[in-house]
Image (tube, rainbow, N blue to C red):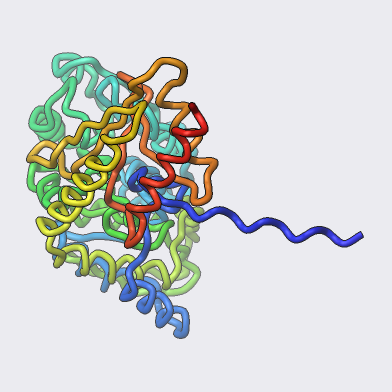
Length: 385
């Protein structure tokens, strides 16, 4: 008996923001065109990366930049750069770090999600509660200080930079979700950070598996060496120097091979970053705010929920519309789950700590979504009674 045709998936209204499980964002036509054009030609990837570096430098103020296979890959490669530098013997050994300095220090509380990708490079992690503990922890085996650029506590960014410089070790920022605001593309490095890791697939609206690192030329050079395979002689350069590597021993296949990016992703990221750097971000915020006010006015008339608009500000780059249950008998999490089962399915953003909150994030709402979202709320609330 032939299989019955499967039901096509419901359309998704993404009111959850830049959510990886939903594909992060929608690429704009110029990005798609750049990827399509790249797919039709052969290129020397090292030269494509050099061109990408120029665009990353223009957008961030860094010495050099490199396109990587997502921010998590960038974190692993940044750790590898701190451990191995441009030592080809060490690059060949990673993630085996036996007998070489491999300690990376993080402030406590900055290990919530992605510290495991630092460990992929063979790093040994040490967590410190305050600046005094940081100063005491730094030793001959310390190769770097990593931190989450969105978390100011428990050690200030200025203190991390000062301690890193005094010890002569790099300070690396996980800046994957630090944009928007767009100014953070430059501000994080301007604070003295040696290397920052950004995603390319959220606000920048590049390919879903893309990211980039930006910072000191020597660290970016190491990321490059970790990332490529050297079975041919290649001439390389960045903002600082030129190198010539050939096929003479030691033959190198860096751990970054697992995180390689193709010519299409490089071209797409470059096009997306150029467009984002030139975008009118104030106009975006005005549009987002206007949409949420209109949605709030409609939802506030529905029984069973309360809504609260948090406008964008210097501290919060994106306005958000918080939704709370105003009746007994069901929770706001249940309403969110009910919305996800509809057609179209509506995904809201949700936090479970420090408080359970649900909100509408406008950054990925598309033309026509607002009315469908309001109708979905009406239907879900009727089902909940």
